[in-house]
Length: 392
Image (cartoon, rainbow, N blue to C red; front, side, top):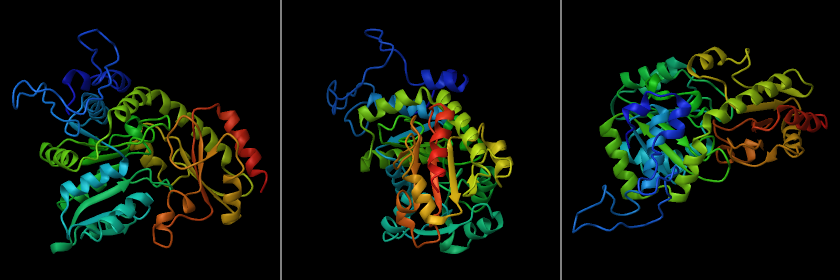
């Protein structure tokens, strides 16, 4: 769904509150009603009211969310799915055929790699994991001649959970020179901190479960694009395969999205304070946060992101045992999968979110924990980490 020109010209928080959120004309209700209907009455055969026919093909609540997502990512078309992986699957089905190849980061989210390698691999989709920061290597991998030429270049930046920063504009040039599309998973940054389409990307992917929903109470995914032909292909798959977000999920995601800018400021403030506090503490080998000046991607992140986000990864000198002990010793940080909610979460990726890539080149270091820093008071979060780390 496309945004209006008037909304597109306003600031981020204004778009977040108003895009797709026109008041209900019959009663004047400021919050648009939640539409649960699975089917719609027709004014004679084929006489559709506002194009609505059946809930899988269209729903006013989902359409409102899609307009909101497009407005915030600076795209012309957005599509809401039942999960982030459903969105990724929909994209690959829309643009790839058996024999096509995807070049992806060797630090990609475990679920993405599992989908591409284990679900779509037997269907004939090939993949090449590679270090996305080594641009010459990426260029070589993407530009292979003949049937091995890449169809998609897939990158997360910041990456999950190693917090690597990749040059989106440079990758876009490499992908386009080779006739490939650049897909950017923008889940960690959110539309508030980074807009890949403006940097040359062709597709933005989100797990809307995370920062966009923001309250750990809804699962969803999204794709945002500018190209009309690509949007038509994705829209067909969304309808034909049917992994759409339900109306309640769309409503909850829209409600969360309205406060994204405010929340991301607090997430970023807290994460910066915590990362700086962690640096140099006994027992800590490395703090991975792009807001730290010595992070290898700091300058690039400062260039292509508005702030540095709420995600931190920490590696311990005591190895796996130390990481596990800290992960199981916090009180405010809850040990759980997922990220991006208002509450702080602690994750041990090697055995949790990235267990599916153990034993591969995408495996996560066993001495690493991942922090999703919430919006609580930073001093309380630091005290919680202090008592947990002091047990080492």
